[in-house]
Image (cartoon, rainbow, N blue to C red; front, top):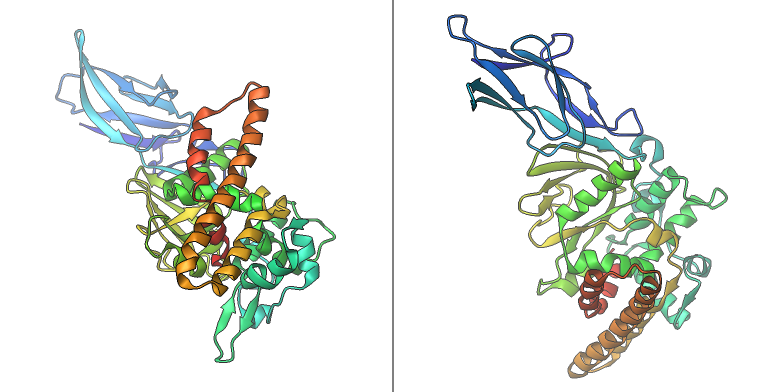
Length: 411
């Protein structure tokens, strides 16, 4: 006895796809298929019953055949069971794992929406931010002149050192500008190259830092994958970028890693064929002409990931998935200003005086984060939508706000 899967027209069924490709919403392709039980001719034929996943339907198509109509999002693996009825008892005589592919695409198309430059000094030339870029990036900052000359200039720029090596990069600005342009979120009158510098600098904004802080403090590549998929399921598009190779917070070298690691890419498609594994295709401004190589592999069971172009350590780094809104609307830089003053002060303080300085600065940053959250929480209570669980999580998160500020300067 065996169970045969075929299309409604009788051809062998190679794969069932739950996808939004070619459409604005997810659907099953094909939308129906046939299940047939092949039973030995010389054996007594019992009555059969087909057990399906929740929400699926089947119509009999003969004594041992059904037309099945899949429905809803798949939970992998997807199984069908054939049960033989003998009197009042039923026993499973076959269990079939269906060949299901759960795949989707974002509105971003790397062929159409990539920018005209790769993240290389040969294409962009040397990039030095100007005061007009800083003014377009932030409306308000503490000691703006010091921030511009210090942390902002450290983060925004692409320069060739005297020894010929290259310092800096604009992966965040290139990735987020390309995504914003694809989604129609860029000002049509804005110069794209200027917007690259503006959005790259916005990683120092308070909105971007606070949006990234929970991802940094509670690292989970699996959560980043699911956030992208959830966006596509609920809206049909996603405005998230992935920051890959971000160090996990418990590493001893976390501060050094934050300053020297991290890379921003745009996820635009995913495919999952097993419960424990998934793949996400990304636009990488470092490798815009190699889409076959820029694939993030997620180990959903162990909560790890791999990105071969960077050779990431999935056990010591994570993926941050902050939406574009935090960059488009982030126009203040209080946290980065304080972090910049802290870094400059630390350069002038004897080593034994640095620790008290760090503790004091961390306390100030935590107080700012906590005050901002309390204002939001007060508004929620007035509207009857208090969220105690989130409050407790972010109260603990605020204690590490200084680490979140340092995270922005990694790229």
